[in-house]
Length: 285
Length: 302
Ligand code: SF4
Ligand code: SF4
Image 1 (cartoon, rainbow over the protein chains, first blue to last red):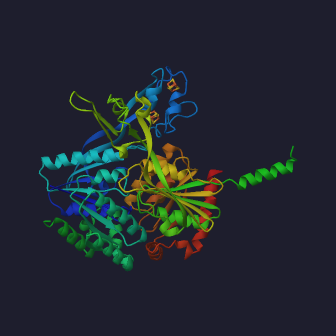
Image 2 (cartoon, rainbow over the protein chains, first blue to last red; image 1 turned 30 degrees about the vertical axis):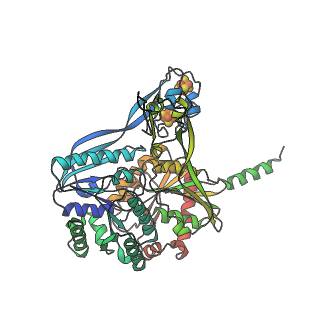
Image 3 (spheres, chains in turn yellow, brown; image 1 turned 180 degrees about the vertical axis):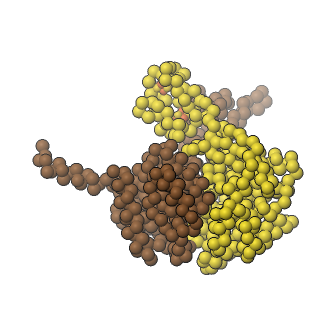
């Protein structure tokens, strides 16, 4: 079983569009959307949710006002400014460290499990799909990513799947690192803009750090041919194969607006190119 | 005592001094957040620009501010003096982030102390709890903060080191540079999780940039929920506003969310963007649009 992650560094370069199309092309796979704080893949895959689970990402402090003697120790020790002047807890600031509980002389503070999101196991016409929704203004997206990848892996093993296809998140931080752990191939989708190149460079560094094999797809490549060449050069310098060039075409936004994976919406040039990309990913090695 | 007219004058001056901290965010990435932030900043006077998208800071590819100093961004992590430690394991017990592991000593071997500093949230609980005062806090670099200016625009930006995950802590440090004598424009990271919350928190207003696609709308709704929870006033900029129908406008009207600006799709803007050129430089009429947007935000806040 191979785990393939679609990733980009910069947001909005076409990650979800590509993931949905690869999901439609690949046989015998499980799909995961790791973008837990702005999940979009479900819009294209139209899942039928079979099971939903609460995700407990950590703990948060709560205070028993009846016990509290207003000594202010909790506020004094909390490094996250979670206590206001009336010693009330701002739960969006609390990091669940439990320091306040330790220092409270009258045991007024309790650490309680915090449901920081939900995750879903679904059926789609493309196969099993796992995605999540981080609660509003909640943290621990990295842990939630690790959780849903774990769930997907169990399903994949159980069903003897050949692939796990994973939609990544933008950036290089905590959810991205959780998405990268144990990946067999990272497909980086970028665009020929100065920011696309800059962000891709950071992702390449991260991927090298984790010693993961990567391949690159350049989306909207004809927007700026000069930058496109720069990307190719950067890839070859880093021993990364460029496996596809997708031209700028309004058909892409049309497919999204119609909530369909591109390869199903049209079978024009771009569809053909994505099929080639899949063949290059799918080939042995 | 000052004569009445003098007090009046001071009040008026005070009003002029009334600057705002405005964050530019978007649930979905790639909707044009940085573009709006940069072009907005270039259209106003007396501006400070902060790039808080510390995982992928790229505003300066467009602003080209000259960097005058680079500061290491540090957090404190525990360092255990094994000469003092008796391997009681209290620190491991108290740490909620599994950043410390203590293997107790046995008859034939000495105990082992393991620290995983990249997991540490710098809460300080381990230092407090240690009965042997064996733990001290030491600095660990998680990234850099660049400070500079482009002409009259003051600039600061954070850059997270590769392999680090504590973006919110770096964002906090970038925000320490906020200069209230300026109008502060802050470029936020994409998404709706902790780095975004850290960025938009305590800003006076948030501009949400979106695009009219099902993805754009889906992620806009998530971002709106976050801002409502944090009680931050906000408005929406619709980028590439003509690529589909008016779904965003309808949503905003229903929810009573002000639409601050609509930017139609323009291949010229896309090309300028690809080369790192802020479009107000080539299309100065947009400056008027951004100034108008600023006036609208001020009216909302008054
Ligand atoms: S648990 Fe930690 S972060 Fe939360 S309120 Fe208590 S001291 Fe502050
Ligand atoms: S430390 Fe305990 S008693 Fe003191 S103010 Fe905080 S909650 Fe109240």
